[in-house]
Length: 99
Figure 1 (spheres, helix red, strand yellow):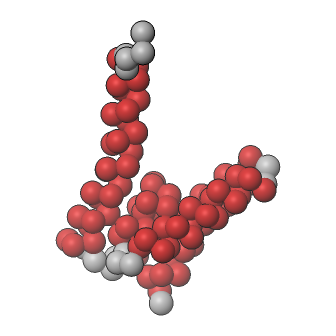
Figure 2 (cartoon, one colour; figure 1 turned 30 degrees about the vertical axis):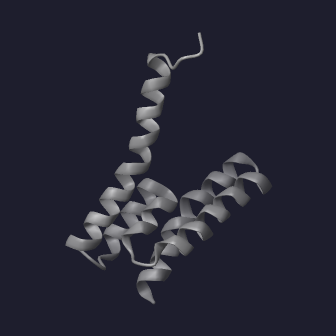
């Protein structure tokens, strides 16, 4: 059988929600509560690079943080890479909002 079973469908729905929810929440909070530092930091801690959506001009910064995360996974041991990935996005958001 080559079709998608129930497990594949659930995984696809989870993957779509994991992308749509951070984007929707970031864009919505950008309009209703713009420029609040703690909201930006919470979004980046929860959603990683996708939390950069909260501040305008996010695509370049998203790619930078994503590159840092991929490089950390490739170059460091797993525990160090996890620490770098958890710290990178909030630090970039802090830098962006304090400029």
